[in-house]
Length: 157
Ligand code: THU
Image (cartoon, rainbow, N blue to C red; front, side, top):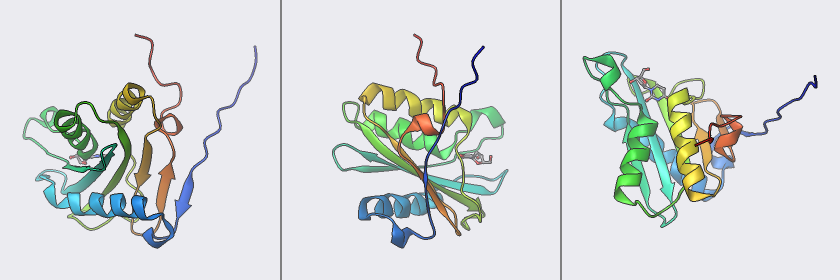
């Protein structure tokens, strides 16, 4: 038996002003995307913005439904929309923002497992790292690739 470790590095910013212009733009788009949330049950509004390799940014927001599992997170709404609009382009990064009733949360909104798996798939499809930015009012986290938030990604088929 061998004990092994997995190390994850990420960047933490105190404000968007510390970020490079491209990331700052994507972060701002995620905040704007929160306005598209339809969350009559949780009242938690989440926005996501995906940067494509052609320079386009595609937004998404969470969509809830009375039949709860029929709803969808902001991240998957954005990624599926991005893939449907630009099927032959790569997703280079995604930013996520959220909070109750549209006010940015104090702690970064971290994507659910299902959304991480979908990120992993599009990253594998493009063969390029897809960065992940998680926003909050007090601090912002940036991960350079999906592997950093989903170690041991399933890619066996
Ligand atoms: N939600 C997202 O859209 N993304 C996340 O990363 C976490 C959760 C949504 C799903 C649901 O509409 C609401 O937030 C509360 O869970």
